[in-house]
Image (cartoon, rainbow, N blue to C red):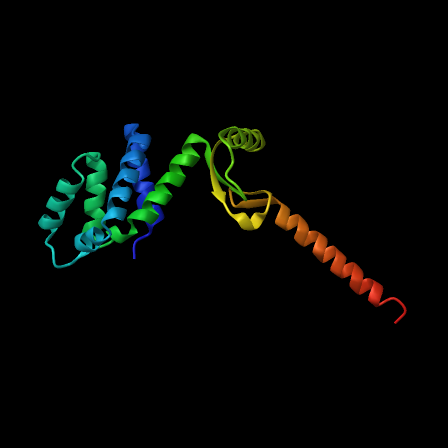
Length: 184
């Protein structure tokens, strides 16, 4: 099994040396999107039934518009029958790019979709708090009822109405238990 983080780091260092971090990231995302549409393609390229030359030719044809170093990277993964790790490797590469560029990705979970203005304001507040550029994704989950749950940098802040109601319910239950136990 290959270490996707190490492979992503190798690709990152090569791209950084060339000044092509964003180009490689863009091409990598496009390649992942294309492969998602044809998931059997990875199985084909990882197949030991193909010769190395056949795999390389198929990669050259399918990814002709992709950066040459990225195509070479795909060939290395395919040669190790590990192209199935492409999505995890792409995520690890993106995380390295984000760190290099001072970006954090955050998720705002709300009962209804945020407006563009609300999303911008929330992103600005997070930027002030973290000192980094924030890319904010909004996920709609009706179960939060109202308010917002924020996830970023391994942290979750829960200011949802559901969370507040749950806290009140717990407080009332513990108070009720305390009242029942008086005089026993």
